[in-house]
Length: 279
Image 1 (cartoon, rainbow, N blue to C red):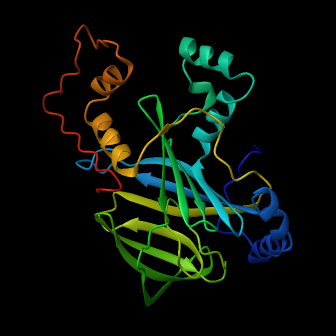
Image 2 (image 1 turned 135 degrees about the horizontal axis):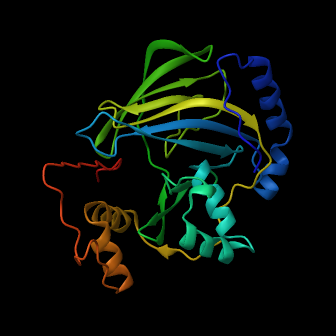
């Protein structure tokens, strides 16, 4: 993958217009080979501990054409691509021996493929070393569009709200970029979603750039554990609650931490990670 340059507020609308024009011209090819036309960059900020105000950030990419999109973490996807390559085994050994710092820090590991032709979401995530995969129908967010507006990167954006799986979200979209897509599972507004967050500010996605792309809109080739959304969420919550116990149970191996076979909670430290989809 080429080096990503985060665009500043000086990004010219004429450049965006040119990219959109190129997207329209190349649509027929994208339908044949699932090639992307564009990539949007977002900054994801979320609270690992809702008792704290310190956020964790990751650079996310929305790669899309007219019929499909793939949303992923830039760092995680880059590392996973290396692990799935011919040099994957040697890279894995290097990581086990020396750590993964030189390959980039993995923060978010999920990948979300939206298939608008078949009305499906294909979702994968690495939970404790196991690669889960499930499909679901594209959800109906039941957006409520208001007349409230604001400027984001010199684009006129309009506000929309929705309630989705335990959270209330506020989104800002622009019809100046006529793409009915957005970060994470969000879609279905009359323009690109530039910013979206839950009202508790546990999770937020903010647009930081746009560029032309010809990359594939496909999941990486690897072994996945087929699951359902409900089973995946249960596994993910169990992993968050006690990672050592989860990995130990999944692998059948006894894992010790500081001489103990179980991770003991630290006194005086309250960690409360609230998953994005509560149900």
